[in-house]
Every structure is written in C-alpha cells, then in structure tokens.
Length: 523
Image 1: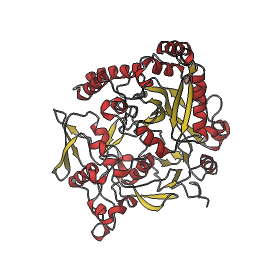
Image 2: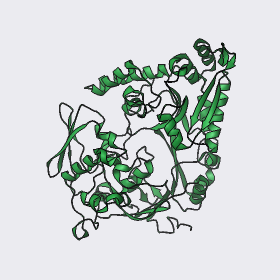
Image 3: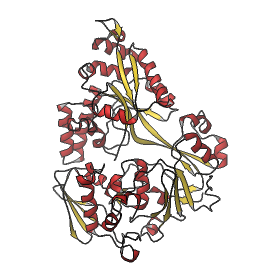
Image 4: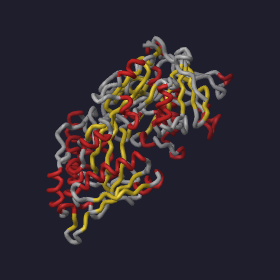
C-alpha cells in the first residue's frame, strides 16, 4: 500500500523510515530507534539542546540541576505543568500532574535489577534518590561523576506513571503514557507507528514553532533501495542517511547535491557524528596482545585515505578513540597514521619482516571476525585484506551471525573484530571507558585491554575537581591508548540526511530523540 505524501496530506504529517521498535518502555530503549520513538511521548529529566553546538544540556521535565559543593548531590526540580497524558490507567481517564515521587519511582525502577534494564548502568554511581518536596528530587552519588547530568538526558531516565506500569504490567512496553509533545496513536508492529501532537503540551509556546507537524509517522522499510524510491516518490519526507549504492545519484564529484535533485526541492545536510569505527584487538591473544610493535604496524598499514574514498568521503580518518567536538579530546597528530614504510619497519621490529614468520617462512595470518555477511561487509573486509597484503599479512575473515559474533567477542574467542561505538554523550569519558580494565568483557572493553597507567589516568580524570585537571588526565590517557594501539583506529563517521524542502528547522544531531517537535512545515 502506498502512503500519501506530506504534500497530499496537507503538510501536517512528517514521515520517515525507521527500524523496528521493540519497546516503548523507557528503561528498555537500548536501540537508537526505540529511543527515537519513546522520546516523542516521554520526557527525560534533561535534554540535549537542539540548537547549541558544541552540545550542551537544557531543561527537560526538570530544570538544570544544582550540584552540591562536594559534587555528590544533584538537585532536580520539576518544571511547571509537567503532566501525564490522558489514559485509562488514571481515574476517569484523565492525566495528572507529575510529582517528585514520580521521578523517584522512575529512576528506582530503572536501577532495579529485577527489571533488567539495559540502561541500569546509568545509575551505577547513584547512592540514593529522594523527594525533598512535591517537585524537588535530590540524587546522591557514591562518588563524584562529572557527566552524571548527561545520563539523565538519556531516554532511560524518562518520567513514567506508576499507574500505567501497574495497569499494563508486562505489556507496558506496548503502551505509552508520557508527559511529552506527542501521543502514540497507532502501532502496527514491524510496519508503522503514528504519533499525534498533544496540543496542550506545556512547551509549545516556549518552542515558538510556527507550524509543528500534527502527526509523526514512522514506516518500517528495511531495504535501502525501497527507501530511496519512496523518498523520490515523496512517500517519506526524509532519509536519515544516504546509502553508499545511491551516493552517485545524490552527490556530485564536488560533494554537493545533484542539481537535478536540488531543483526539485531536495536538501542535503551533513555533519560530524560521535561514532568511531575500529578493529578491536583481543589483548589476550598470545601474539597480538604481547606485541605492541605489531599492533602499531597494523595501524600504520591501514590506508585511511582509501577507506575514506571507499565510503564516498562519508568518513574521516580516526586518530584515536575520541571524535572531534568531544570535551577532553586531544588534537596532536597520531604517530601511527597511514605510512607504509613505517608499517614495514615496525613489522620487522616486531619480528615479522615482510609480514613473514622467520621460524616458518610463512605469512602471518590474522583472523578477523565480522557480525554480518552482507555485500557491504564483504567489500569492506576485502579492502582491508588489500591493505594488509601490501605488507605481507593475510587477513582471514570469519563471518558470523550477529548473535554468534557478539558472544564470540564477549567470550574472547576472536583475534581481531570489527565494531563501532556511538557516544552516549560528548565527553571523553564515554569513549575512554572502553579501555579501563574494570570494563573488560563482557563489559564494553571487548578487547580486554589492561594498562595500570591508563587506569590511573582515567581514575584521576574521574576524581578531578576542575575541568583543567580532568583534561590533563584525559590527555595522558589518550596518549597511552594511541601508543599501545589496542584498536586499529578506522574512521569517524559523518552524518548525512536528505529531505524535501517543506521540512523546516531540521538539524543534524547526534541526539535525535524527540527532535521532531522542532520541525516545522513550510520552506
């Protein structure tokens, strides 16, 4: 069935493709698409400012918190008019004002192990949560954690009503009873979701959006070619990315939108993201884990310019784990960036001249595990194989199902593995935590990298009383990781979107959760 375009619908509906949404329960919104859908209905305590670059926090359901002198207590105050939408879970079906007790209930529900929330980690530093009056909540931490307010801007912290949780029980994730700008009107699972605007939402006057969309429609379309045809047919208003196979039809040789599309009213937007791609090294591997020169050589042999061309300039070379624009990142040149001669020299120093093991005379073979076997994955690994052939190393791909791959990585049954990390917030801590020994698998430190000096710098940054002291510690921590090379640093992802020009006030952001409330209809 073809969908009506926004033009045919009078410009009141914004439509876009979205992956399948598993749950609307905020504490189970582990996937980006789950969070996007939930954030239309629910409000976390804070949100990321849609307009500000570099990113900063702004009020959400609560005002920005006040931090105590000892940096242990954050006091949040509910904003005026935060109200749950009408729903049968309330007496007479009428929604009610949210209270501080609702915030306490929501956060305690998030950190309750019995609920098995994928976001329970956001409460790891929390000691206690208490309502000090009807609208004020004090959150006491076990120790200082400078990024804690950012965690309360994630969808996990959204305010929920106990009445809704109690009424819907195990099916609560299929309902949505929030305090946000839209209401979930219809949901055909794995097909379509429709959200309607709550005109009584308290922040519409504050946003001053002259023409907000009355409906938001998410359509589940997994095939990129189908998405592209739907966009050209104006059946969807926006594509959140430009598929590599369609790139030449969208962008000219100068990196600009094709004039034929521009003339029709299509716009192309691009911006850096907080995503870093990497090949992880299993540091428990008896060869790679003990041979730093070999790991450095692998980085020097990685042809970042060719990788960038392969991805149609949609990536930039990674010079470490922390992307540009992140607080605490260092800008010094990476010593082990692409350099074939240096790679060969390091290989010789590592004991593998020309990529061969002198004891056997055979080429060094390194298995690399991948969690997908589609054409794109095969082309990527073939390109990597070509890079390492130049220095005599043979990469041996091992394709797995995603579930089997994650288990193999978590269990340490890989040698090299290919992954990406998307920052939850723009602070170096979110990326450098991937190297702390406390986070070894099954934690986010999937390569089981252990370096006491790194841990010391990380811990110093976390306990630093001033930004200056914290940045000094982050600098040293990054220097250590870039010297040790527990990853092959691949690339920083760029974000692209194409949209029809009747969608106004559309900005690319790493935090696209609930941002549709800012979109306006009209050029």
